[in-house]
Structures are given as structure tokens and as C-alpha cells.
Length: 259
Ligand SMILES: NC(=O)c1ccc[n+]([C@@H]2O[C@H](COP(=O)([O-])OP(=O)(O)OC[C@H]3O[C@@H](n4cnc5c(N)ncnc54)[C@H](O)[C@@H]3O)[C@@H](O)[C@H]2O)c1
Image: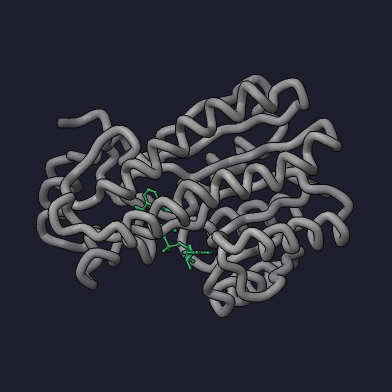
């Protein structure tokens, strides 16, 4: 028995990394997955991978998650094609490295817009349909940086903490409609974002290998991979998750436990 048989999920940022991992996992469990990404090529590649494996995936073109008319059309098209919207995964994200003194308001706004405002709007669009269905799951990808930090990531941290606050609030508001709202806090996951800082994959640096792996700053001794997050996202979308809402699930190999 597949765990998401006949379910329909929209996944933002599904053109690479964690979003692609979630899309593959969901499709492998029988879901119809609607892939949206500003990188259409990446999303089409994800679609091709899923179809090759025998799954059902759609990509309705290049979709910027902050273009709310475009996102509304994706939602409407998904519901028209598959008859329902069961799961919304707010995953698309960006990071801009800047400290408070040198950072620019434009960059702050962009990071907040993609990582927080679009989560609000994606959730709202999904909730409008899910309330009518009296069922649904909203899953947002936050970060361990919502509660721990380094320098140069103020806007990102603020946005990811905002996602946690919004998740709790929506969980309370949407519970009467049988809509469960949860978030995931990934740790260091090997994706395109791990090379965002200066072109070096931060999970491949000597510092990472020595401190985070060999000395077990990450107790499980490895960087995460998209599948690690996808498994948790599958649980949150499935019938195994029935009585949990408004929660942040930390998936970081134990990283946030260590000093
Ligand atoms: N990789 C990590 O270590 C890590 C840790 C914690 C949280 N996260 C979060 O996981 C999520 C996925 O990131 P990832 O690591 O897979 O990185 P990634 O860069 O591989 O994937 C992000 C995806 O979002 C898409 N995207 C960016 N801006 C968009 C926009 N305006 N509209 C639509 N799509 C857009 C990108 O094209 C890309 O496909 C993000 O929210 C990120 O903040 C990642």
C-alpha cells in the first residue's frame, strides 16, 4: 500500500535539492506531484526523473514563488487536473550573506519575500482549497537557523524563525478544518544551497570535515542529503501523522544538540 496514493501535492522549489528529494519521495509513494520553481529547467528535470521512475508529475512552466497570480494559477490547475490539493510544501528558499552593517534593504526584502512572505501566500492559497475539502497538510521548510545562528545570515534567520511562528498560528486557525500544519528544520544538507556562500561546498571544506564530521559536531557524522528531509516530509504528509500540528521537526543529525 503506497502511503500517498491518490494524493496531490504542490512542492515549491522542486527543481533541485530538498524540493526535488521531496517530490521524488512523494511520487514514489503514489502522489501526483506538481512541481514549481523559478528554475523551469530544474523542475522539468525533476519531472523527467519522476516520470522515468513511473510516477506522475506536472510542471506548469517557470513559476516564481513570489508571483502570487502565477502561484494561484498553479493551485487552480492542480485542483482542476487532479480534483484536490492534499499537501502543500513550501520549500523554495534563498540565502544572501551579509552582515547588519553592510547589508542592503533590497536584499533583506528579497530574502523575507521568498523565504517568509511566499510561505504565507502559498499556505493561504492551499488553505482556501483545503478548508472546502475539510482536509489537508501544509508543510514548510524552515531551518535550524530559526533558533541557532552564525554571522551574516540575519534576514535568512528572521525569515526562518518567522516560518515557525506562522506555522504555529496557522495550525491553530486551520485545525477546525482538519488541516495539519507543520515545519521542518533541516541542518547542514548537501544541496545547491551549501555552495551559496563563495562557490565552495561548505560540506566539503577541511573545517567541516574536521569539526563537524571527525569531531562529531554533527553527532551522526555526516552532512544530510535531500532524502533525509524527504522522509520527514513524507511522514508529515501521510496518515502516520494524525495528531501532530504546529510543530517544528528538527532533522539535523543531532547538530543543534552540540556546542
Ligand atoms: N541545504 C541546507 O543545508 C538547508 C538547511 C536548512 C534549510 N534549508 C532550506 O531548504 C529549502 C530548499 O533548499 P535547498 O537546500 O534544497 O537549496 P537549493 O538551492 O538546491 O533549492 C532551492 C530551490 O528553490 C528555488 N527557488 C529559489 N527562489 C525561488 C523563487 N523565487 N521562486 C521559486 N523557486 C525558487 C531554486 O531555484 C531551487 O531550485 C530552502 O527553503 C532552504 O532555506 C536548506
